[in-house]
Length: 338
Ligand code: KG4
Ligand code: ZN
Image (cartoon, rainbow, N blue to C red; front, side):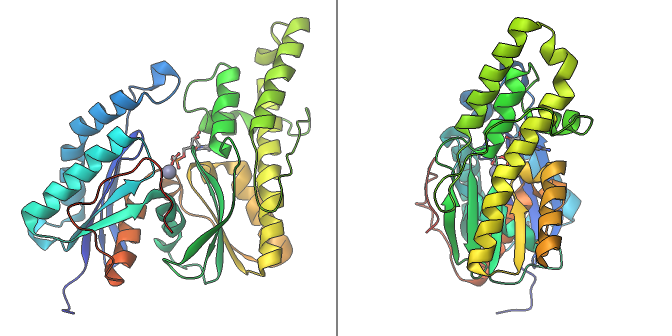
């Protein structure tokens, strides 16, 4: 192999963020994220609008990512993109762009699994986790405990049976009349509330599984009941409600994660995905690791929520492994990486 740096242009378009990044030899040179505002008024992501917004944004976002990185097209080594999972129309925009770009510049293509990329976001900043590494990935669509034996050898040892942790945050926010995406707002309000004021059930699914549909229903019935007696209940108690629901979600996650870490005997643990931006989860996770003498890895905020830098770092390890895709590759809405 030559001494030329490995410069990867990475594209992420699985949901409502249009993102492009440039990674050089595993170091992030730029990471641009254009979050689509069009969905706010609908209380959730509207797939067709997301695809259209990706089409409008992808060219300018890539141009700025290259400019900020100070890398020209001719200096690129490969193009990485999110192949799965996600909204199919949104994935198609990123995949078509990446394929066309790679073909025009005669560059190899790297097809990346979004959930694997959330885990590998831990290998952007140093110190990197050591293997075996156990990662709790908590996003808007997934909740998984992933055992990593190496960068690309990963196994999902437990996941949610129904809603994801992010959905539990977003649906709670919706019931409280907060705008989408509700997770960050629940986090903010919870900081001024009492997490022990109200009690909601903590599910206990077999092995390392999770369930969040029960807490959602419990919150719904609780609010209906309270509002019968006091129509202003939500407005008067919103901080305590947010803090109590958040506490329940965090306890559900951390009890299982701690159990899994003990059973697998790992020393290095991490949290990843959009919900890992939650201040309560970050603090609770750090405390759990300190108590057990484990090494806690918590990514910077910008690498928790969807971003192309994590696609780029995954592409980098795939490149080193010679794991290239050809132009016949298609995106898929749902797929395992194994
Ligand atoms: O990983 P991500 O950006 O997108 C997916 O792949 O789904 O995760 C988005 C999810 C949303 O449910 C959002 O409400 C949640 O992450 N989220 C948070 C916080 N920031 C983002 N949930 C709780 N607290 C936060 N601070
Ligand atoms: Zn994600």
